[in-house]
Length: 447
Image (cartoon, rainbow, N blue to C red; front, top):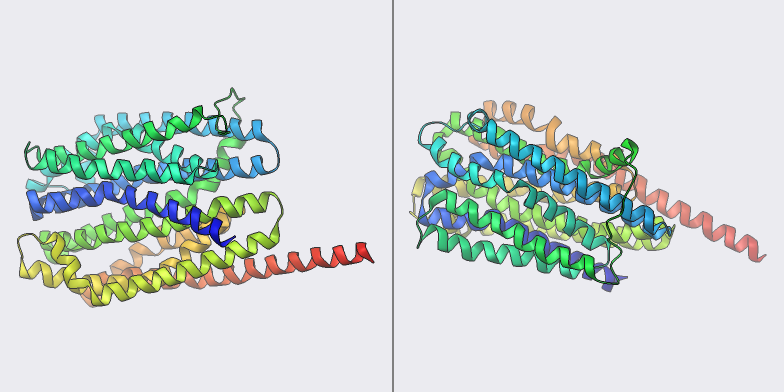
């Protein structure tokens, strides 16, 4: 069990690190080649990036979870119909987003807070990135299904290949070719295309059960896909909400310097959230498989391994934030601005206090999805992603200014964790209780 768990989680985490390189590489090379205004402009556009990613993960995780449950029950054709439905709807939604972003580009950018010089920088990145929305969304869908079709290694290779390509192209487009933010966006957009090409090759393999089949469209199926994947969307959408709200508050409190400082923290946050997501997407196929086969003993084993993994990683992030804030900030502070260094380092230490609590909440989100309990997952996702963030941010920033801003996520995650801990106790008791009942029934049969 441990070997299988490590295999799935490590490959999924590597995949998500590759995904985070899409944005992180942009930030690093923009910081070195363009400067603080470029980072601030990118940060204004990142909420849109998170929404697009969230839609991809919603369809991918939601459809792939149902795919695994149906396949583990011997309903292979039914599983393939769900795969076909998910891919088609994801493609149609992505085309709709392209149209909206093309025809309403300026209103969207203004709503994000882009104005003056930052508006022109942000427009360059936004215009290029949104044209490739289908590639991003379908890439997330394919990678999710690969993991659930017994190919976590290929999913990792596809994502990492895209991330490495992004790094190389970022350097070429920003430095030798001098294409600025538009070049950074173009480099990012080539990455999912490469990942998608590698992932689609899996469909031709004989052992693959990912096959396109004609299906009779039913709203019930689409609702099930969306319901199971909605928490994954909320994880990304919450990042978009956080970034948008933080940007607006920091613009009023500290101007462009505040947004730039937050951009550094937000990009480091992308890596950590990617790893937390990778752990969840790694253990989800295992739990869904055992849950579909009604193997409660194996589900309980994965439950324990996943929870311990999350707690250890959350604690590690807290320590890194306290002892490594200054060197982490210096990576993105190419002009050695002392005011930026002081603000970002102070903010990072406070922001990183939230990660042990974030880890607990992520465990509940992905475990609930894996056992086809979308309501529990949605409650946690909504609390940490929508319901609490804005009121906490407004109140805490008014009372404690910048300190309140940086501590907002810790307060949000702590409040949400109260619900998550109760759900962890509930699910664990239900697991151990069902296992005891099954053992008792077996003993009665033998007697």
